[in-house]
Image 1: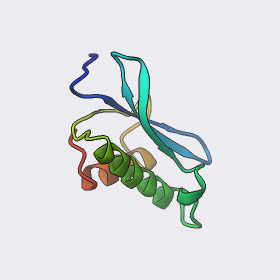
Image 2: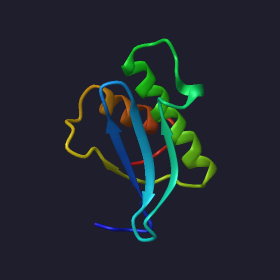
Image 3: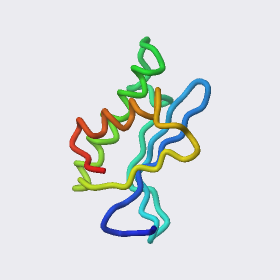
Amino acid sequence: MKSSLRPRLSVYRSNMHTWAQIIDDIKGTTIVAASTKVLSLKSKGTKLEQSTAVGTEIAHLAKAKKITKVVFDRGAYKFHGRVKAVAQAARAGGLEF
């Protein structure tokens, strides 16, 4: 369901990287985005640790844009592993979903 009150937090993962973006479906625009491809988030940790960093970063960027409530969109992925790490870190960072 499209809602301007609760933008969508979409998570995508590949074999090497994890992306997260908050999307306003009404306007069709990406509000904020973070990924492991960004140099500041590339750490020598595991992919799970990098995904946790993505969740923390997306929460930080969302708070800067005054976004606190989102709808979590895991896509076709199970709520497990890196997807779960992004979600838990985003919740710990202050996002509600």
